[in-house]
Structure formats: structure tokens, C-alpha cells
Image (cartoon, rainbow, N blue to C red; front, side):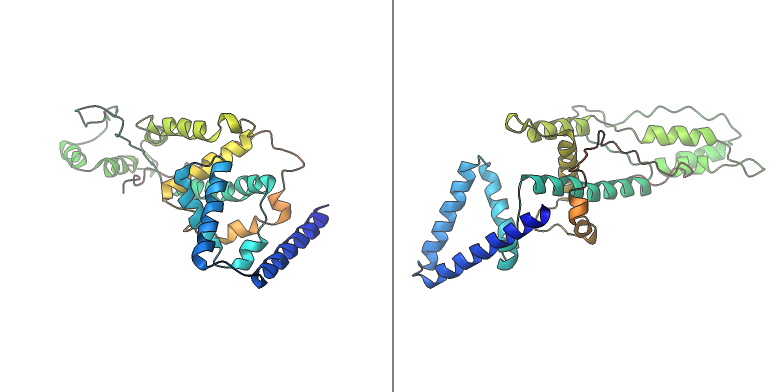
Length: 274
């Protein structure tokens, strides 16, 4: 069945190329007139499909980038299913792998967003329990002069005479505390992203598609990428094979939740700001 669709698509492409070749033999309009005609057709597409006007420039830039090779543009195929599967099975897995790798290799990431905070006090409370250990006055003064990360690294590296960690439980507690966000701005942005994505006219989107689109859009925006400057890697291309692209066509996964564990043996490392 897939082979038949491929053959039919090849026939359509060849036919369109033949039509374009025949059109070149007909009297052509001037370049300025053809440019205006193309702009009219593009504006008609924007109006017909109810596409926001401010996105028109981005769509045009994308097609201008792709159109540098006319044969590639003429041979492209894109339908509803293929577009959905590329987002779900190609773009989302690559972005998820990037995020997981960054989190696992950046210990104690702490996200601080004060844009929505209305407060005159810039101090952020961080409750800790004073260590009642064999710390001399000089050691306490030395610790007080260190920044937050170095202070905790120095404390957690303290060992007993038998070379065992003096505060093993404190390491786990600190890992948990420092992974908490300082603000609810990020979850609020996620809710806004979700409401903009799954609208009344797109209420049939599955949870898999919604999750994939949210993951890609959030990471894409965080890097400041666009479709014209994004780097298409070998990972993307390897996932574009038919067996991987349509892997979930026969059977849908019930859950898209994946848990990724970090190395719990690591102690406090540099914060995100470092």
C-alpha cells in the first residue's frame, strides 16, 4: 500500500514538472507581474486557512529557504499524518534528548524568574538548618565568605576520619531543594502555550501530538531558533525513515511519560548561572 502511494506521488510530481515545463513554453508575464501574482496567491492562502498575518513573513522565509533548490521543493510531500508524525517521532525525541542530557549534566539547575514578582525586597529566603558540627569560628567565617555553591560544596565534601561522607543525607536533601523552581512563571507559560496550541478548531489533537508540540515549541523558543536557521542533524534524518516515522501508526502508546534519572552519586555542582 505504501509503495502504491509512493508510485502515485511520483506520477503526480512528474506531471506537475511536465506542466511547469509546458508553462515555460507559453508567453510569460513580466517578472514584476509574476511576483505580484505570487504575492496575491500567498495572501489568499493566508486568508483561506485563517493563518495569523504576523506569521506570513516566517512562512515566506521558510519557503524561500527551501526553494533554493527548486527540485527539492517540487518533490516535497506533506500531509496531515506525515506532518504530525514528523513533530511527534522526529522533532520531539531529539529535543527531549537534548533537554535530558542538559539536565543530567548541569547539576542543581535553579530557575529564577522575577518578571512577574512585584516586590521591593530582592532577597530570596532559603531555609536551612544550622550545622552543629565541629566547625571552628575560623571555618565558619571562611564559609560565610564563599558564594552559595562553593559553600555547600565545601560542607558536603567534609568526611569522617575513615573517609566516609559526614553529611550523606544532606546531599540528597539539597539536591531536592535546589531543583525546585523559585517562581510559578514557567508553569504559567506552559498553560498559555497549551491554550494557544489546542484551540476550539484543533480540539481533536491527541495528547501525544499536544505533548510533542509543547516540548518542541518550548525548547525551540528557548534557543531562539527558527525553521530557517535550525540545524538539522543526523539524528533527525535517521528518524525520517518510514519504519520509524510511522512506528506508532498501528498501535498508539497509552502514555508518553518518560522518567530520566540523574546520577544520584554526584554532589552539589555549579548552578545554571555559572
